[in-house]
Image (cartoon, rainbow, N blue to C red):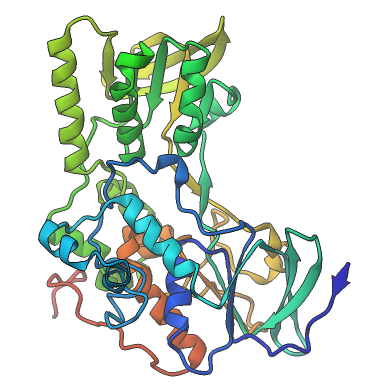
Amino acid sequence: MSERTAEEPILDLAAVGVGPFNLSLAALADEVEGLAFEAYDQRPAYDWHPGLMFDWASLQVSFLADLVSLIRPTSRWSFLNYLVEHDRMYPFYIAERFHVPRREYADYCAWVAGRLPSLRFATSVDEVRWLADRDLWELTLRHTDTGATSTRLARAITLGVGTEPYLPPALAGVAGERVFHSGEHLHRVAELTEVGVRHVTVVGSGQSGAEVFLDLVRRQREAGWAVTWLTRSWGFAPLDYSKLVLEYTTPAYMRYFNGLEPAVRDRLIASQWQLYKGIDSETIDLIHNELYDHLLDGDRPPITLLPATAVRAAAPAGDGLRLTTHHADTGRGAEIETGAVIAATGYAPRRPECLAPVEKLIAWDEQGRYDVSEGHRIRTVPEVGAGLYVQNAELHTHGAAAPDLGIGAYRGALILNAVAGRDVFRVPRRTAFQTFGPAPG
């Protein structure tokens, strides 16, 4: 059943996907008088990385990097107001926790999502078309609970569909019950115990890999498995959280980075991985404590950490797998027999299928990525005046800040100011002490 609803008011802005960044956009949009805004997500409700929601895990950024505070700290959608509404302000004040529990941040986001009137869950955006005669976007919506379809018109769209789990080629061919992505960990780790897995290998040394490894070690006494953790990186390196390095995740550096040549940007991103791919020091300390306790126990199955070790191939072997590895420093190969592999191998940008009808209108770079302006607008062919914006798919054009929660409110404010055609929100200009370009001549 299809129902055309073009008689409804034209939206000033439609958001595709409701992750943290489009949720931030929606929270700020709620304060813009007269703005027609809706956000759509095919899931039945807001949910944020449930497969990695460890009870003990903390957010890697300050609670100030909530949905709104770095732009509008007086908003009713701030984290501090969430605490007030839940009668936790004084306990939080006394706790002095700059980095809040991840599950508390997730609950805060769900609290906001459950109260914003502009969000439309269980609604999939199946198709986006450009109406040339009106310079509008037409969105075909499908209501996942009923299957009914409808359409909405919008002057601008913001894409916030996030990323998708990435399995490298060496592991993708054997994905299944014994090989899965770390994003599924808490949903599937019990299965490994049930089938009697005796050896688990974690591949990847970012924050997710560290947390999965720590969880496996903590389960070891009950599960009885050996644990191997390997990474192709030179070591299990920390996030660089020093003050001047953190300035590389500010709006000031984003503006500078966006103005560089694409080849320079790609080179910088490759060299700046510790800004967003490392392990926080608290998790490293917890891991080391567990390893020391393991040393004291003496009778537990082995735990092995292998830096500079890449998986070149994987093949079924009995009830488990045989991994062919390569050691970067010595050039030597080795094989590892394991019962299961959990791949903490990151996430890849997701290109929304709904854009298929308009892909030829979009400017792509040589690697098939969005060409994104400083204001987070995707460049399109000149005939298209309707805005097309993106959140968290512009690492290659805006640098390491793009996936950082601390940039969400700022980016949302830029988009809303552009859509409104006026400065609805005051955006900061001086956000770093460093001058990233050449010295003034």
